[in-house]
Image 1 (spheres, protein in one colour):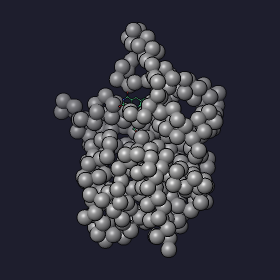
Image 2: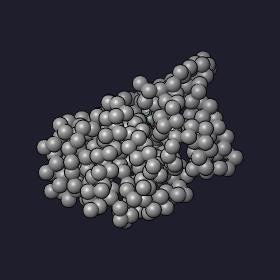
Image 3: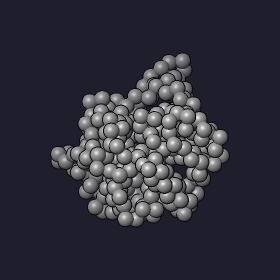
Image 4: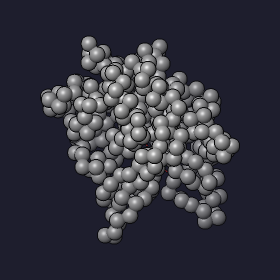
Length: 318
Ligand code: FO1
């Protein structure tokens, strides 16, 4: 079975662990969000690609969900001693090595997809990880501070501002001119099932779908497309997805996120058992819906979620 997963950072990466356990024989291609990417200290940082790579490769800081385990921050401290920031973004020493290798390869002319493949040769994530695009796409958020509106980089909104200021729009700058990375459209067209993990529907999966050609390829693949709600009991399982959903005018409910993707894209949708009351509404919108436990509290629980997603895919295919 060939499975394509459109993934953001922590939620996508943790779900993928369960999917690998649920379908050990499957060929899994992960199309990773690069809208969160940021250039710092002359280096290109790809948080979502790295989170997937480190999580599946055994190098992730488990509790935090991003960055490396056993991390130290000497370089960051030394930069701060020179007055060089930003101090609000926590790049650790081990993580720095990844960004140095990536930037060096990009400077030598390799596209991000080739660089990602090279980095994965070390981490062996057990999936094929492809960035959504080799072209630069950067998500910016239109925020309001002191009565004034300005656009800031997604990481500044997310990490420095903790998404605590009003957001009026989310713009994947560069997406309209970006091309899908080599292999993305082919993987989608050759897949047997496409999965939207419980990643952020706006700044993760929404950004991937904003790259011209990807949304169309998913819609036209002719295979089941199933998703898992990142919203449980009207709140995000983790992160601040509710803030960016509000910015694009979508309510923070499992049913509203399904409707946001729409029946033109989604065939099946899993909601948590606490949201069982939403099943009828989602089905009325033309999307097959089941209520199952959706808390990724252990590998076993996550594996069961992945099994449920594949079972729902089989059900909509039949
Ligand atoms: N998240 C934070 O909340 N604070 C940080 O300082 C931070 C640093 C960081 C460095 C590398 C990396 O790969 C991820 C990092 N993240 C950090 C996570 C990241 O900001 C977001 O959670 C994702 O971009 C959203 O998917």
